[in-house]
Image (cartoon, rainbow, N blue to C red; front, side):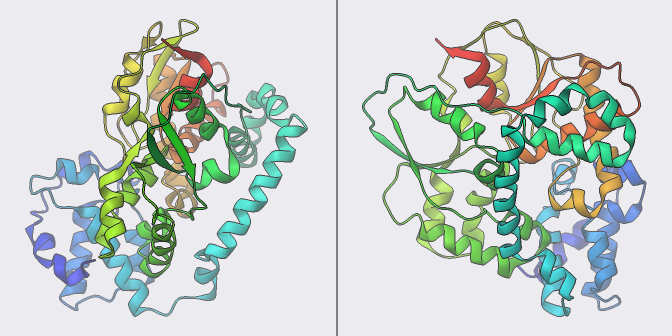
Length: 406
């Protein structure tokens, strides 16, 4: 991994034209010049020249970023902003004494304990039928303020209890190591069950391993030591022979492919070559919906446009292209915790485009994006309970639950 100094030329290459302002979701929500790339580059330029110190205040400004990388796509010089910010944050961790509170927040042990607690909590939560009860009263609950909105967001995590329906199996000729993300592994197993249903009639054997988190939140935060520990543990799981590594989360897919940038291990190079999304296997499948649904998609920042073609080709649905369907949802994991007000503002604007389209379903391939979209919907519901509320759903669950394979 490069150091911040290694990006000096890229930072200098920024002409400060301000085009990044027009695509940065955080700048649009705050109008804060330090939230946009050129503003951060001015700060980083001062650090490289030793005119500024890389302290907590600077780190706070660097954290004003969802990591969507829209600025890179729009930048005339194609500067990879995200990598530069990660390098700067990594330098912050090297040069500064980390507080006890920061260590607690960044503790992976506590993170896993939280996930285990979440698994137990949501199992009980579903068993006693709370998701349906709260869903029925959601328009009342969202009027109770921020607590009510958070309760509904929590409730959105618990929706559904899908069990796989296995088709007649073919002879398995390919081995796929299945990398499920933290959310799908601990909180909601229905995405994995859906993937098993869809692929049950194929020639693919799904192999489960006890993977750790992909490390995306540590990487985006610049905590490279913590990220590398997870990287090494996950690579240890990939010593056996396999045809490909299969992911159902756009963020996990992106991070696994980039492990090779942080280690010289051959397994990391192999992982980059053989990691694919479930959607990559579905391009030749023919799906027919069991009803005439109006469906829109949200493209996660880390996914390609390929999965949208799968949705468009589902027989029997009406595909609606919502405004800004490919723009950031504003959640982005840790960003939503650190910048709650900004995150809610971005999510609300994003969700409104789907409510305007009056669709039945919003399909995506990222669990964090599901949370972001649901967060935006609760913000709108708090103001207007007459809106038609679409269901935010993982693409693979929709295909398994509401479609059949022809």
